[in-house]
Image (cartoon, rainbow, N blue to C red; front, side, top):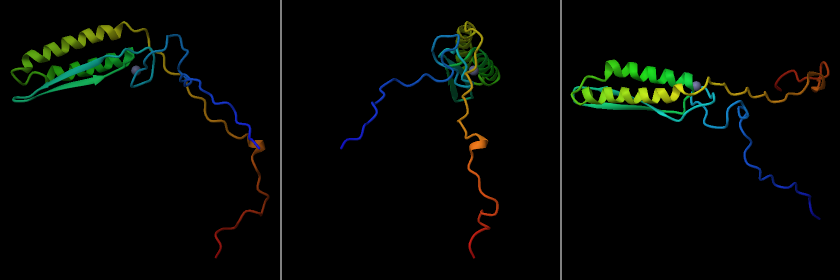
Length: 142
Ligand SMILES: [Zn+2]
């Protein structure tokens, strides 16, 4: 005796709900999920008297989030990036690299948020099982 088995579905993964929008498939923003997004890394620098820190914030970013990320990193670098001898050279280079990154981000069209995901189907109220009045247990047995 054999049990019929439905054929295996070897189809690739279904596209996410936001796919099929006005823009071709590509990366979506790491913060808001909007498309289109560009895969860039925004950098920052912190100089201390004897040490320094290189900051990086990898994308992808949509236009709005990318502009905000560059603005935040450059603003922090403007007051945190100068406090060391090597940092006097490294910090302006870092901010210039960010400006080049910003020009790539600004070439993106306006971001489109991902489509909302439909909620899970629920049972209609009319077809929910009913409990006859007085048949519910009164509480835990004593
Ligand atoms: Zn975004």
